[in-house]
Amino acid sequence: MSYSLYRDGEKNLTSTTDAPNCTIKTASVPVSGVVYKDYDDDGVRDANEQDNMENYTVLLYSGSYTSGTTGLTQIASNTTNYNTGAYSFAYIIYKPGTYTLSVRVPSTQAIGAYAGICRRLDF
Image (tube, rainbow, N blue to C red; front, side, top):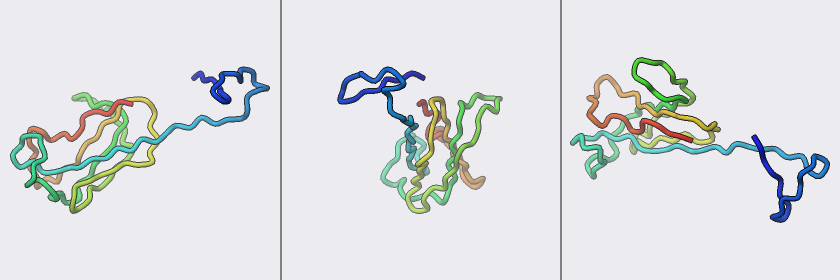
């Protein structure tokens, strides 16, 4: 990694004797959304498809899913809000890469054509 130090908008700190001690921090990126039952299986959340989730689990993985491989590492999970289906992953520090979200659907629920809420997150 390379970086430059600036003072008052000027790139004037180039030697180690001029440079103050500093720490470079990685920012956390929140990921949030809503899981809902898509009754008409059109991939669009309609007015009658509100507030109908019952504590589904959303899983966050690092890596990209490829059929037949196990290239994913689970890094977090979150249970959806009972009333709204909302989920949120906050204060997780991400490195550049590919991330995958999945929803653990109860065996009593049918899965439609638009079952995936988000196939990939690239940072």
